[in-house]
Amino acid sequence: MNKFIYLDSAATMQKSDAVIDAQTHFLREKYANSGRGVCMRVAAVDDMVRDTRRSIAEFINADYRDVIFTSGTTDSFNRIVNILKLKPYTVVAVSDLDHHSARLPFQMAGAKITVCPLDDNMNIDIDNVPYADVFVVTAMSNVLGMPQDVAAIVRAAREKNPDVIVVVDAAQYVVHEKIDVKKWDCDFLAFSGHKIGADTGVGVMYIKNADGYPADKFGGGMVERRIYENDFLFMRAPEKFEAGTLPLTQICGFGRAVREIQSARPDLNLIKYLYDELLKINRVKILTRRDASMLSFIIDGMHVLDFGAIAGAHNICVRVGNMCASWIHQHLNIDGSIRVSVGPYNTKDDIDSFISVVRGCVK
Ligand code: PMP
Image (cartoon, rainbow, N blue to C red; front, top):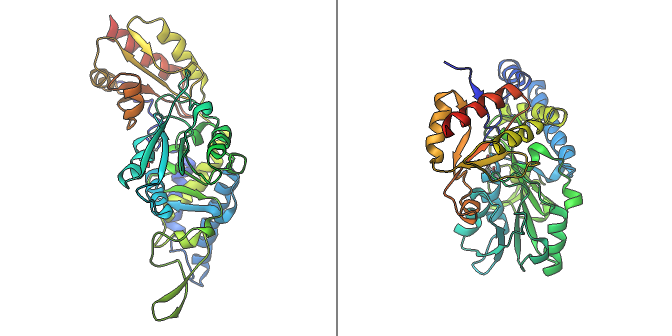
């Protein structure tokens, strides 16, 4: 069997020893629930949750209280729809860069969808943003891998409607680029821990001035006190939005992953190298730019699933299909693509092995 080569970090990143060790240590030696317990063990768990939240707040330049733990980007988007209490006449602007998780929650809630066009470079067309009540901005497409100028898009959207609520999908952007929610001036932002090396089951929903919005989930851990009969006073954000027991083990690893990703981002020179090599191969049609954060392509005359099976037989894991981003594929007039993405652990040897598989397919 060939060595296993993982080139699918945009789907989920492999975990470092430091993250795995932090979680194992927490489970073995430090485990308890967070909340109002008074013993030292519980206080230490509270500190761990607070430290992770503080690291994430610094990571995206948010206020501490505006960082809310969710189970991931998809969960965050579904919750944002509930928090905003969408009406059927709410106009939600989207773009063809969207992942299904960013657009479908709004669409299925019955919002009036308007599509913001892309420019010639397949970026959100800042000169032609439509009027919207809510603007969904995919900060980096999980197929094309180009960072969008979120601050400029927000400014353009506010020129059309000063009250627009801007919701940013940062699931891919967060892996490669520094986020600054204050500079961007967005209202909501979401990303998942597992794409930056944390475990699955934990993510972030940033809400600008979170205390100004009503809670969307109710239960333990978010009640300040019972005032009278059925009258309750809820805690301030972030707890107000975190009913129920948090994914504590994952939050423990998340703190470690946030610190690690800032010092070891994926080496995008590997993508440039792959780009240059694939350009030389007949029948390969590259869909992404050389400076993108991932490389997507198709092979003329070959179904992407067939290619995926052949790569898999060589023990190489890449993503094939529509990547849960059917709109961009429709925009490009194709059913699906092959996506290569790298993590901090990939090497040039990994890319060379992949290139020889592609060469073998076009012989
Ligand atoms: N948005 C984008 C751009 C993504 O790449 C993904 C993950 N493929 C998601 C949203 C959804 O993330 P999750 O499945 O972790 O909720």
